[in-house]
Amino acid sequence: MAPIPTPPAEPDDTPDAYVGLPVDRAEPLARERGWATVRTLQPGAIITMEYRVGRLNFEVRDGAVARSWKG
Image (cartoon, rainbow, N blue to C red; front, top):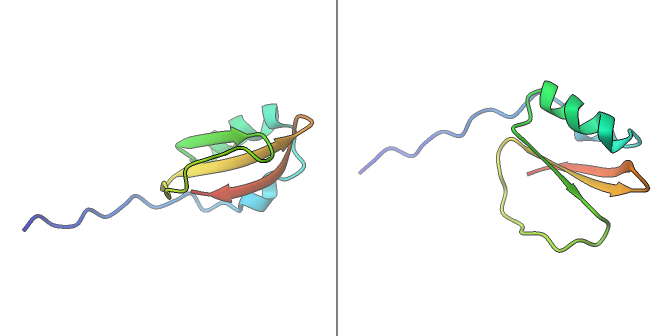
């Protein structure tokens, strides 16, 4: 049987640190800090619920990050 792959480590970063930042500043900052994927979403957007290591999600209201979470 093939070995189970080990997912890469996530950045040592707190998603709450992005709340309140303008999205045009938050996205590049997240990439600088090591997030492979940054997904911006409008409030109430329908999204898939699979967990992706290295992905940071932003809920954006009025051009600023209102909520941020991993996966």
